[in-house]
Image (tube, rainbow, N blue to C red):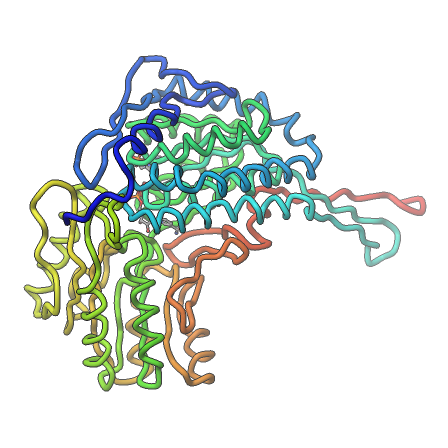
Length: 496
Ligand code: NAP
């Protein structure tokens, strides 16, 4: 962990200096009413980068009022103009990718190359939904009896509350903000307190791109529940979109039921990664590295359980161990680093606890499993084999760089084990047998299947889970529907 820095301290100071640290309400930045601030830390060092305003309930309510004031005129803005705002923001994000990546790496920890990848992915949601803004459709039909007509139109759902997690600080925002703008909805966004800076930078870009004041409001707070619950229960917001853990999602669904809000929930996962005896092992190992190590394993789509056919398990484990062992761990700003720190001490300690539990139950270590105890929240890339199915890490999200391998003997056993979870976000499947590929894809209980690939995320595809992994879809042509209401107008015709 002593690679030379690929960015210098002056770059870091310049980028930090440029990012606003207040609350963004009604088109301007201002401090919290209480004057409180909260610290944003660098997970690679544990040191504070900057203090940002810490919103209280009154600030949250003001943000909601600003969104409500902006809603009507924004809904009336021409779709093409809303699309152009998103397109300009896409261009600016793309132009500023280096600075935005440095900011993201500092607050979240992922290596610069991964931050750049996330920023490109985040920007694509704006390009995609900028294009979708002008394709909001409707309908006109003759009633079956022929005596009346139906007109169907789509209208913005209204003011939205958007809550995002720390693991993809910009993309989880643009995935919601993009369709909200395209549909004509004003919003209050609450970013994760650990990573608000990327969202603050995004708000500046949208304002520069011509987004009217009050359409986007940002409240960063150390009291997420205290600030958001009154907004959810207020009744003026009509939609709640959340990305985060399943326990918090459950709580929010309960709160949203009070005023019957539309909800979208992108929740936790426990992805199985199946490797059959007829898989191309090169592809499977490449896919495993992508599905496991993207974002240091801190992704809802991370492969959590590797289920590998007994005949290929030793070769798969050998190759995966070699690849994991070659990864360079360090501060994400340093040259050549491929694996950054986990987000905080709690996240790192949870990974350690899950690994120890698996070892106590009989798992074998191929590499890793020895947590670093210096500054920063690092956990080494780890491969475990012979992981028993009663180990906690087969049930809970690991959210770290740990590959847990279990063997199976036949397809039924593999599919049963894969589906044996309350989650259903994504499943991965590696086989060269076409019939098996289709059959198993149909049998897997997941909103998404990665077939011979370790990456499913794409702004043009419907992202989302089934079971306790969530409700609704983000991205694709259905992504904008989550922010639209369908209205039907019955038209009297022919004297009816
Ligand atoms: P989390 O603890 O549920 O937090 C997510 C967001 O909710 C944060 O902004 C958090 O604020 C806020 N929050 C926490 N308690 C709240 C409450 N009572 N009321 C309102 N907001 C509240 O999840 P996390 O640990 O940050 O993120 C990791 C989880 O997100 C994992 O389970 C992962 O699988 C899931 N995730 C899912 C997807 C998907 O698309 N399905 C994508 C990415 C991540 P503070 O952090 O500021 O307290």
